[in-house]
Length: 438
Image (cartoon, rainbow, N blue to C red; front, side):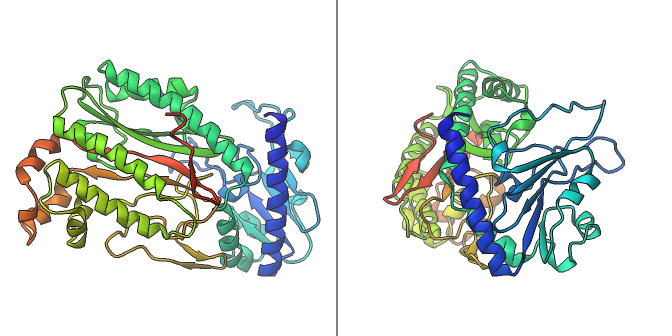
């Protein structure tokens, strides 16, 4: 990392210390222990599942691996205990001199037991992590295991990104863009879903396990499956939807593009072009103070208007949204918070102390119901899909005549379209983190 990046990280840690001290005081605790996570072995097996470090641990330090501990106390340098067991089955790479080391009271031990001895503190101590039984056996009170008031406060803090976090996410965007460009080039040559996936991973320079989520690469009708992760070997798809990201120091990029070939129906190609234009307009609407559900509702209206333009609907977007038609074509939320987790925390949180802002009745899957605020990072990902199980009720319902079902039948084999960018909210509006790269 450059000296600028190291400086940003030091500022990030200083802000984390101030925030955690305020949160501990508010919740009535003297110290906090956060673990990186527990190694998990599949049932009746001897293979470990891939580890995703605890989000609140990763918020402080990009140290991979299970069982590491972080002890946080007001007025004291954060203590980081790295567990590096002696082991000849798996690589135990030396820590070296990472850029973050000087920001911690750093210790290395060979056992979990030794780590907990170094992570003990006086007074009332809280714990965050998934090793609750281990925490209790080391003196943490049951009431202090993942206490909701403290976790809510820290979740809220995670929704506002520091300059260091934004820099990490920008680098993740650049890496993901390499993958998307390589994936498009493979698609243009007639590659299969599996071959496109391989092109993506190779361009990103990482293993599939190192991606923030499994790639979604769907040809034709499979592009209408929102979380499709199959990788077919048939070649020469007419449409491809590529939803794939990358990570840098634990922070994610989450980007979706839909591409077509000349063999695709001209109206579906217009749908893809219109969705890209529509998505850009939605990004332009991002400003502090706007409730995210209002942006989501605007997306429904705009998608309805686009469907009318390509001949699917016979009414305006406003009318289609009013009677619930657009929900059959756009069944997911417009976007979600992004950061250490792809679907980052507190998207529906009411205030720092907790509480929930429920999604609109028409949009139960909307993950973000907060009011847009400076330093948030979230996705903007409108989509339109031809999904038989969702369209079925409207085909026989009271508003059936508002849809040209012959056009639906013609376009359905091409699946769906989604365009997704990652957006940083600024004081004056927003900055698109994705478009400068792809």
